[in-house]
Length: 180
Image 1 (tube, helix red, strand yellow):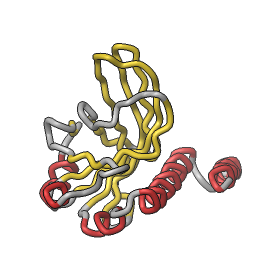
Image 2 (spheres, helix red, strand yellow; image 1 turned 90 degrees about the horizontal axis):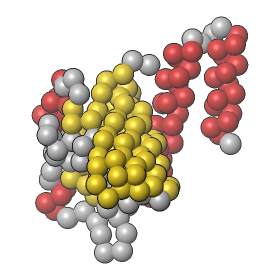
Image 3 (cartoon, rainbow, N blue to C red; image 1 turned 45 degrees about the horizontal axis):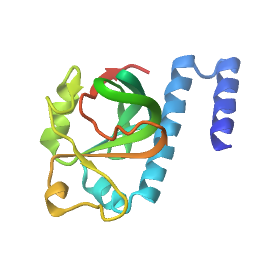
Image 4 (tube, rainbow, N blue to C red; image 1 turned 45 degrees about the vertical axis):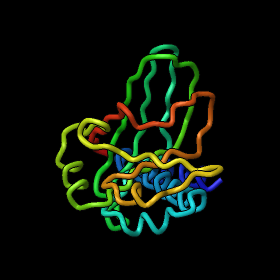
């Protein structure tokens, strides 16, 4: 319901000329990023503590993936530094193998060191597994964060999965700066 109110308010602002379509699109994405962070804090037990220690947080409120032998995915998000949006990003991925189905999910990447954040921000198309390794954290029965994982420079979370595809990795994801 809150999303509908936000969309209505943005549509009205654009129609009245007080907001450009580009400003409305970035405001809508910022609202989805804030909502994703709230779900992250609620659904992932150590989220607030880890986010508080991070140097930057890359948030993709909804990433869509689909595949039938060959697959792909895409989503838009924002990089937060000190709680403020500093840049917008798009993620894309391509994969092949035993794939079938589709899913929507939330992806959050925590940059735990200044160096990892600086390298990410300086890149012109950062790719997970090549430009940096993301330690994926899964939650459920018997899972959690161990001390080795907590010390890695980049930690990733995938949650809020909806759909019938079993891909819970960042392998092959590429991140691109976009202008909103």
